[in-house]
Amino acid sequence: MNSPSAEFRIIALCILVLHTSVLQSQLRIRIFADKSPGSVLFSVTVGEYSLTDSNGRIKTMRSGESAIISRFNSGLAVKTNNDPAFICDSVHFSATDSKASFSVRINSDVPQRQYYTGDLICYPDLGTVVMINLPDIDSYLAGVVRAEGGSGKHIEYLKTQAIIARTYMYKYLHKHTSDRYNLCDNTHCQAFNGVINDSLIVKAVRDTRDLVILGRDSV
Image 1 (tube, helix red, strand yellow):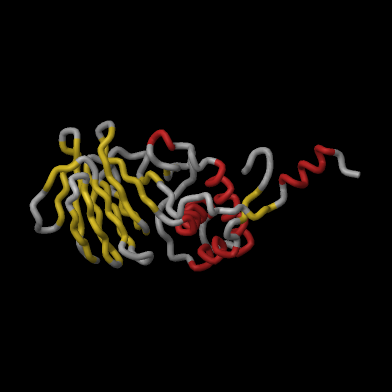
Image 2 (image 1 turned 60 degrees about the vertical axis):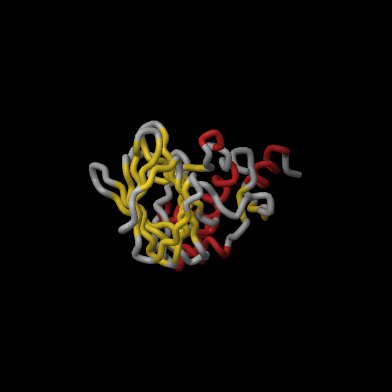
C-alpha cells in the first residue's frame, strides 16, 4: 500500500481536466512590459478593428491602416492616417472577428515589431504607454510555447510545454490584478511574443485543451 506522501507524488504527476467555464474568454496580457515606450505604432494586418477612445469617439480601421499612440501630458495623443490627432485618456482597438490581427512597433534602442490577435488597450502610466493585449486562451498559450519551448520540436514535447504553460496561467491568473491585467509577457510571468503560425504548436495546444498538472506547486 502506498504511503500518503507517495500517493501525493503520484497525484502531483497526474494531468486532470480543468473546467474553464469560470475563466473569461479573453486574457489581459501586458505586452512590451520591460520597455517604456513614449509612443507606439498600431497597424491592422488582417481584418478590421474598431477604435474607441475614452471620450466615446469611434473609428473603423481596415487592413493596412495604422495609428500612432503617444504620451501627451497626463493622457494620450492618437493620430490615425490622414485624420487630425486627438487627445484621450485611453484607447481600445477591438477586433471585429476572430481572424483579425495587428502589429505593434515600438521605438527603443532596438526598434521592435510584434504581431498579435484579439484586442489592444492603451493607456498612460508612469511616463509610458501601457499596452494590454486581449488574446483568446489558445492563441496566448501557443505564443508562450513558441517563446519558451521553441519550434521544430516533437509533438509530444510541445504538448507537455502546452500543459505546463496552461497550468502556470491558471495558477497565476490574478498575479497582476491590481495592475489591471492578468499576466505580462516577461519571463517572470511567461514569455509571450505574440501570435504564431506554427501549425504543430497550435495542434499541441488544441490537443491538450483544458489539461493541467495537479499538485502542491501547480494548480
